[in-house]
Image (cartoon, rainbow, N blue to C red; front, side, top):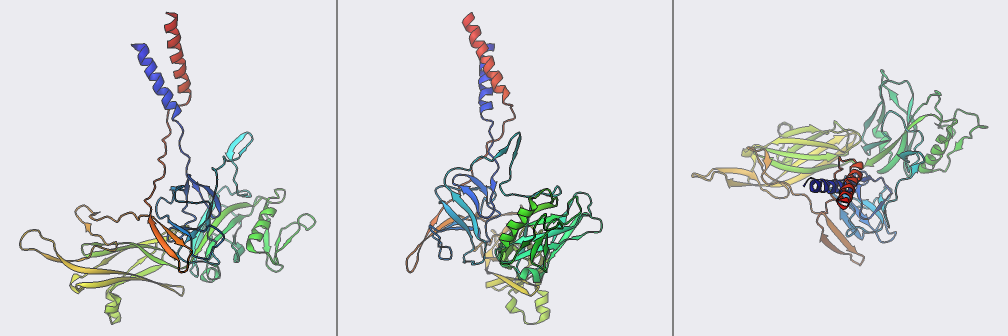
Length: 477
């Protein structure tokens, strides 16, 4: 009996030891990165406002896409379903062609993702993108989201204090920021750089890459931009390192020359931090809206800076005088850091005695740095019986359609929750006029990760030894 129990336990341990593999974390894609069918990836850094991806069978970018896939869900854990995706370039798509945008989201290639290259004797992964001496203070990548023509401030914190000077480099397709200085805090714990409205107004919407540069141990600014001569210079004599003339160079070529100079470790010890920047057109979007008894709640997002004021008015055309408009105006501000799209939530009190049965609207407005944005949401008001006993009580409510839903205060949960958007693949057949076919595709959830077993691998070996011992012992007897 004991031997049977031992065998059963051994088999269980063997099965447990075999199932110890855990699925790797999703690959975080950056613009133009390679991807492969059947893998799970993080597309949050390459997707646009509308959450759509577009594909062309040939190099016809600028015409109507042949295939559009909605990717509004699972962006941090997104499965590249072979039944839905095809090989080639996939572009972020917001419904319009952006001639100056850096819009390639990723490139799907045939095969499977190769294993990372390992360094001999050191089993840490080598970065594919050459990063000259990442700084010890922060992660190797910082992301900036900013609206064209709007102001914002980058705060970069360090561990402890420092007296090192800092500089920022931004490289786009045509626009750039070369070697602009950081301002250090008095206590030396962080750096700041102001993206002024004038500066961002001169940048095309699109994707940028660059570096934060901090002077190294030698106390020198090892590579700098000579504005007068339009060159990349160093503090060293030309007989040691030649200056690089930049006339005729596009910013991406300048970035390559900067990285070449930074690779010379005999003369370069500055700390570099890779950064990415997404310059967006100014936008104001409503993402959710619902009625909560005597309130209308609106949630949304904007590319404008944190702290920007948004004003909301219900039926603004109804109020003639300034005093009336002021009395019916509700304000809120955008929240969120520079590395993400800013968000807001506002609660607008409704005076039902002023709300006639029929159509109404709530309008949100941003006016900042010469930019004016307006977003409008229409809704209908009707009268319903809310008392099941006699006499019935009449109450005005927002008609429950177009995304509106009622909140039950007793449980503080939505009685009609907002459903998850169903992705659609939109096929556009290239004819004159184009034939559009929309096919509903249900979200394919990513493969469920296999939890890592806490049982160490050597348990399986021990189990095999136990089974062998029992079998041999039976034969001897």
